[in-house]
Length: 320
Ligand code: F6P
Image (tube, rainbow, N blue to C red; front, side, top):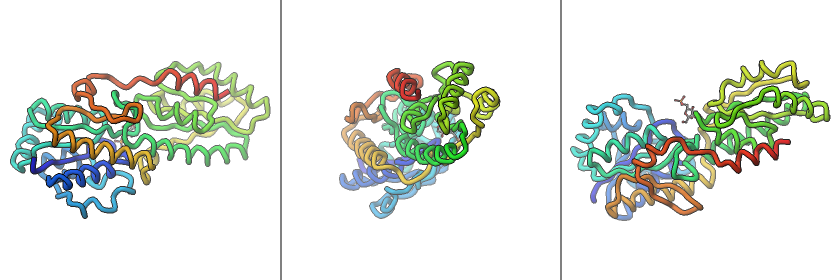
């Protein structure tokens, strides 16, 4: 192989830059040129790319987001768009492609694979909802961001005898909310995977208030509804005055943690090694700290990753 390409697509996440850098430098070490399409599939359709020599990926490891930029691209979802993408790749003599992103991006990668083009997927999404990998890129950094914010909120909550409902991202997954609840010592996690018993939650919060605790924390996944609705529902029942904080896109940015820098570097390097060895149509993943490969077909049709039942039980027990 003489020329490979890489792009980042969908919602950005920390660690994407580490993966791009590692992929580029692994290619260079094998005398292969790497190009990077800008703004995901949109850049591929416009043939908008840059050459990723060693200098081009210097100084990006510690930066959040993706320096290639990202986008959601409706045109690429059409048959015509995908054919155009393939034409552009062939015209530029690209022989293999790496796609970093979440479920929509990996669905796009599978479409290219089905057109006969060699593709490797890298899971990148703070939601950690992609199956066949213990962790996706960006999850650890997002969790650390949430931790920092919630620790700050806990301080002010304690000073005022308040309850806080902190709404976190995750789309339809409660992974971020339940792990953040464990790591911040929150009383409750409200997640889409389990049904909320509002009366029971109010009862328990009231008990905590009467015990003399100075604050109560509820971490709520965005996929489980709106924090403001829950706040209105518990307002008069729990003793604590209640406030809401929606963390929003703050969660997605920031310098990647050590974990995400290492994971991005491992994923990026492995993706190039796979392409060079003739493997295609798979996503790299992590299981028990070892790198894995799974057919993109299985990943895309695998449905949303299930939450670990132990995690839910743990959040329940430790929140008492
Ligand atoms: O999938 C990642 C994610 O950050 C979700 O948690 C969130 O619901 C969504 O993207 C937000 O998307 P956008 O950046 O397009 O508003």
